[in-house]
Image (cartoon, rainbow, N blue to C red; front, side, top):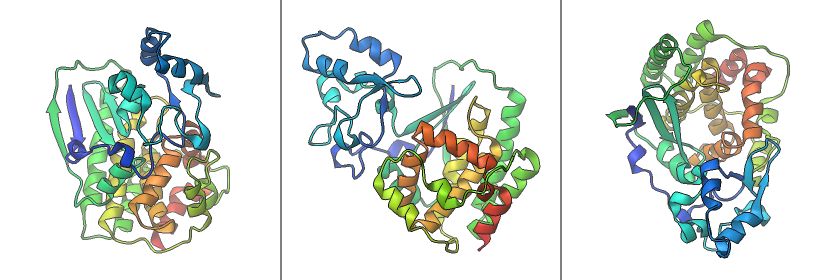
Length: 318
């Protein structure tokens, strides 16, 4: 299988207990089927087995989860902000989400694209301050994954993504003009808006499921400002185009136009809520990693007036 990854990917390292915003706090963790099968084999007399059995439950979507402790902490997160499950039975036996976070994997038949998410503060700091996005390819022995993706659609979208990369890389133009060009280009090909509501951007960013109270305060105090022509804003745009554009081929995921809108919204979040890696991290953790919030957000990308191509362009041009 061909592996595509940003060149910085290999430099990412979790800082565990030193993390300023632990990924083990704020959201529920799914217990995947493979992990559950392993937990069933543990000696019932083990303390970790007793703890696992005592905190398993189901969420409103029917997913098996670990019930959070007070202050929305994972029940296995100890006072040193380290994982008791990891300590007791090894990292390889923690849930898939825990082992993989903040990494993401998008599979397209014989191609796998991997990266890290802004929802991790360490990854956010790394990506926000990049000099320039670039990618590297490798090949491993993993066979292609069977799927229903049409090869012609894949190569067509990949070609369009390359055009967007080229637009975003042109530093002779202001970043707002580059992302506007990307919106305009994709609108002509992938238009899919069905505007039915008049929410403001502030209302859109006020997620129903709150993970970190700091995000609520950021949204409450957000204010319009001109978009800065910074490399950070370019990096935000690259992140969303890389992660989401081809993912429109995956069932239940984004549309190509929505992926470009995500890039525009990411720049506006950074502009209106405080220009920093921490701001984008908070937004990503609140939105990208809550199933409830993300399902709502995907819908609003197609139905909300403030997220229409026209309105996003107006906000970017101010």
